[in-house]
Image (tube, rainbow, N blue to C red; front, side, top):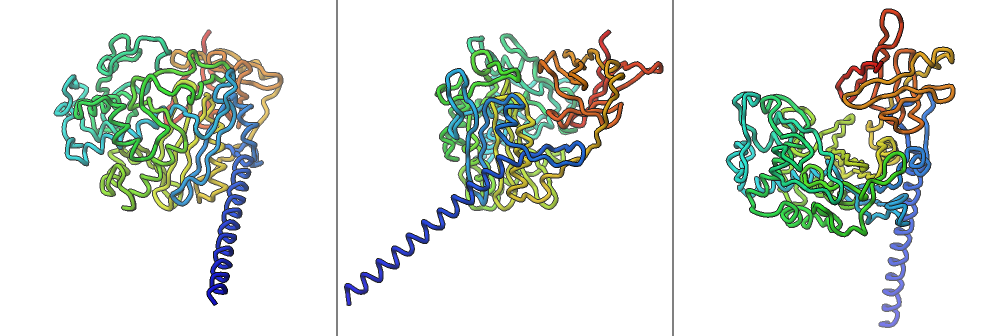
Length: 490
């Protein structure tokens, strides 16, 4: 009887093991199928004509000049899959893997907000108090532009402090690096101007990496610690982000991706260095950033508290003054669903991150290139394959052909700030360049003779401005809610 019972038990165990193996095999097969579908369903946000394209990822990387790409997809509060494509360093023969570190650029600000709010949670920082109460090595110089109002920590994290300095260009390896105070004061060797008031705090949103850099100084002055060390202990380590660091210049060079320009040339020294660590200095992977997203999602539901409590995370996700700008993240609504998001752009590095406030979905995409189109199209593919309702809503635009005998009337150079925008002939079409890049230009797609856009930058819409004689005297560019006039260079 004992032998019979033991045999039955072993049969049950064998059946359970086989069932588990079968389930795992089915799961792996489903994931593999989803990956293949994502790789072959890239779709632009703007559809020209009425044909919905389904593009291949690696082909689009070649077409857009992107050397390497890494992605992590989040489903049901877990990393569903992560994968690398292309070259981390082409000359060295290093391929991108899921472990290759990329520059997170402005996504650094999202992680920074966790570190700052951890101080609030510990009672060491009042988020509504004047930042000068906590700054020790430097004080913010309020002037008439401040309108007699103070700047608080919430202002810094939500870009509502009324400060200038949108972003930072970084430094070539070997360059003298400024201190954080030199950066804020715009003193050499800093390569940006001083971070000062442009208008009174609390009035409206204006993106300011300069304000985030002040929050970096705030962390150091409150804790008395090096910023990268503090962030490692209080944020990265608790989140299990073992392949990430705010250290600048970076360490573990063998794991770092090299940045590439659109013409295929690598960045001098492989990448730029960003002493503005809180604003742009994080080196990481999509898998590690996915861990950050998942922790935010779980904390919001009171299911985890590795860095912030449920109440503090809820405060972080609440828009402050501006309807979409929260504390270190942007709030994006898609139908009935809501996502927290941040994008990033450093010298030859671009990335995006999305996490749903409910149901545990998300994605992180990072490239060592300059063309955001492949990120946008891949994001749309993920949303479609994983059925993120109402996330992907393409815009359909009509396409018209400009008569061949009219093409030359459009050609010429136009001034955009300090850059030269050129319209050139490319066969029987027209193409546009910025400072002669890319060499062959981007094809201009006309919806009518006075309006055009380009596939590679879907958010940029151009209008052609003609004088009374019918000659083109300027272009008008509308992008990100702003409009600029580009006068013709004679």
